[in-house]
Structure formats: structure tokens, C-alpha cells
Length: 108
Image (cartoon, rainbow, N blue to C red; front, side, top):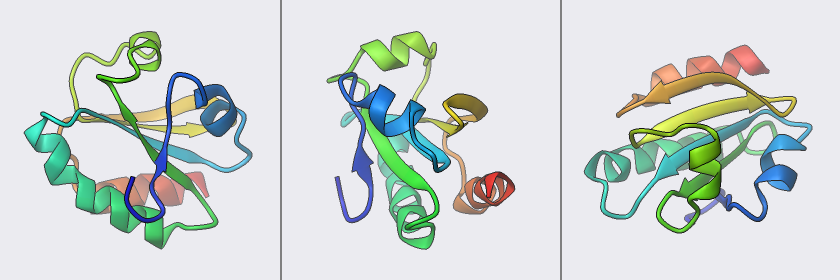
């Protein structure tokens, strides 16, 4: 993953996301997904903007099918915000950075 963007997997999702004391933004994506590539720069910018306040990472749905199945991810990109180990907001499809930033501000 680039810069401050974390890599979440089936193996580390419980520890890195659900057990996190900080809010977490999770981008569910795949390498072949065009809109996923389009949202990637915004995710990277948010990771820099919210460094130390929000954990931001990605789950490759091709390599890690367990978590996307558990959260019923039916289309990508899907961005889910977690706080206290629970899903608090979901965005499906290409979502603009300001909308994601506004949602993150609401969690802080």
C-alpha cells in the first residue's frame, strides 16, 4: 500500500479494524476495478490528512474474500467507516474525497 494507507486482510481485520481505539476507514477494492483506481488517490490523501487520528486502509477483495463476504460487499469500491468495532457508515461506488472527509469529521 502507498504511504500511510494500511493493508487490511482476512487475517488482521479483527486486530487492525474491529479492535482499533481510533475510527477506521476501510476501502474494499480489487486491482482490476477501474473506479477503485480512481478513488485510490483520495484514499491516500485522506490517510495523510487524518494521520494519527483515523486508521485508513484497504482490503483487496480478490486476495481476502472472508471479510468482504462477512460485510456483504456486493460492489466495489465500497468504503466502510468503523468506530468502536462497528460499521457506522457505508459508501458504495466512486465517492468523492470531500464526502468521505465530512463523514470522518463526524466520527472525531
